[in-house]
Picture 1 (cartoon, protein in one colour):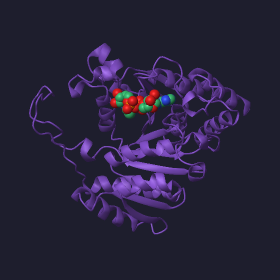
Picture 2 (cartoon, rainbow, N blue to C red):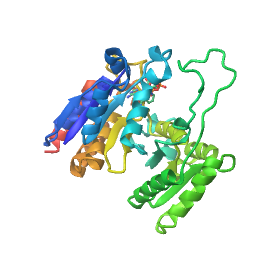
Picture 3 (cartoon, rainbow, N blue to C red):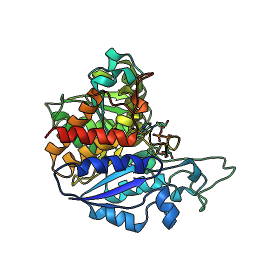
Length: 359
Ligand code: NAD
C-alpha cells in the first residue's frame, strides 16, 4: 500500500505528522513517501504542484493531504498560488466525488454553535461534485490578460457549467452512499434561477429512478443553507455541485463543533482518493502546536476504508477517536470554556494510546 504524503502549508505538516503517527501504530505495512505541495512547493520549485509531486500522487494508491495556502501568496499570479495545487490534483486524478461526513460526537455537542438538542446524534454526509461547476468553467474569471492580473478591470466573469455525464456519475455515487445509510438523498440546486442547475435537477431525478429504495427530494441552496442550521438532522445524504457544496460543507462543519473535526475523501472512478481535513492551512495558528489533528486522523481512516481495503483498521481509528474524546482530551477549538486542553502532538499520542489499548 503506497501512500503519497503531502503535508502542504501552515498547520499541514503538524496535523499530517499526527495522522502518520497513527497509521504507523497499526499493524499494517505502508510505503509512505512525502513531497512538497502548495506554497511549500512554490518555495522550492517555483510551482505549487511540481511534476515530481504530481507523479508521486499518480503512482500512489492513496494521497494523504494536509492543507495549502497562506495570505503571503495572495499577490502571486493565480496559476502559481498554493490553492491551484489542490485544483490541479483533483483535475489530473479525476477526483470528482468529495465525501464530507458531518458527525456530532456526543461529547462535543457543547462545542456546536447550535443548541445541543438540534445537533445531538447528528450524522449527515455531504457529497460535493468536485471537478465541474463554476470553479472549472471556461473561460475562467478575468480572462483577457496573460499575467493573471487586471488592475482596474471593469468587469469579471466565471462560467458555471455541468454536463449530463458529470451529473449522472455524482448522482450514482450519492444514491449508492445513501443505500448504506438511511436511504435518503437531498439534491441541492438553484434550478429556479440557473439553467445549469435545472439540468442538475432533471438528471438527478432520472438517476433516482434507478434507486427506488432511496427517497429523493430537491431543495434550493438558499433554503438548504437555512435548514442546515434550523433542523440539520432532517438530512441524510446531501448531493450538490462544487460551489454550493464548498459553502454548505463548511456551514455543516460548525454543527459538529469545529472544522478541526471534519475529514474528507475525494475519490475518482477507480476509488483512488485524496484524503484531507475539510479545513485549510490555518495560518493564524500555524507553528503554535495547537491545531486539532483529529480531522486529518479521521481522513486517514477514510483512506483505509475507501482506497486501501482496510475497513477494520478504519473502524479501529474511529473508535480510538471516540475514546480520546470520552477520556476528555480536547484541543483548544473543541474545549469548553475553562477546560484543560492538549496540543496537536499530545492529541495524536492519545489516539495512538487508545489504539494500543484496544489490543
Ligand atoms: P481555515 O480552514 O484555514 O481556517 C479557518 C479558521 O478555522 C481559523 O480560525 C483556523 O485557525 C481554524 N482552524 C482550521 N483548522 C483548524 C484545526 N485543525 N484546529 C483548530 N482550528 C482550526 O480557512 P481560512 O482561514 O479561510 O484559509 C486559510 C488558508 O487556507 C487560505 O490560504 C485558504 O485558501 C486555504 N485553504 C486551503 C484549503 C485546502 O488546502 N484544501 C481549504 C480551505 C482553505
